[in-house]
Length: 130
Image (cartoon, rainbow, N blue to C red; front, side):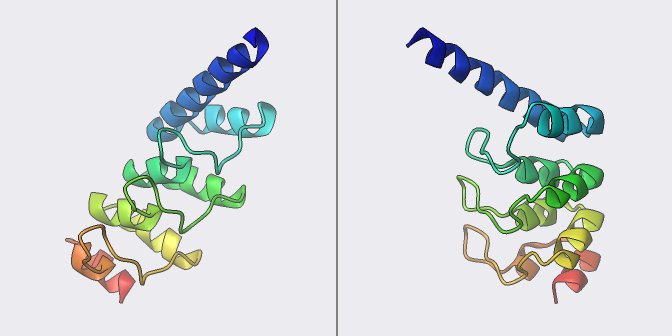
């Protein structure tokens, strides 16, 4: 029992470290977590995937890396938000462009039912979604 509890807390700490590294664009730490410590890029951290956090924070290099490692492009988080929608809402044009180029679905809807084009405020993001 104690061993599984220790493993649980160690894993939780690793995932918290990964979330911090992703949000801050610390590529060295992100790569170490994934390549050395074997953290799965599709494991949720508080109901969201690392790709959601990278999209929220506009961390394009991290997004590129996570996708190269098999991150799920269209996965919904605990709020029903895709990584693409997170980038749209935060106005991260370069991230939106990259996600769309990689095949993220432009046909999604926000939790309020609005289309991605309607959810976008920036014209250049709207143009990428049409």
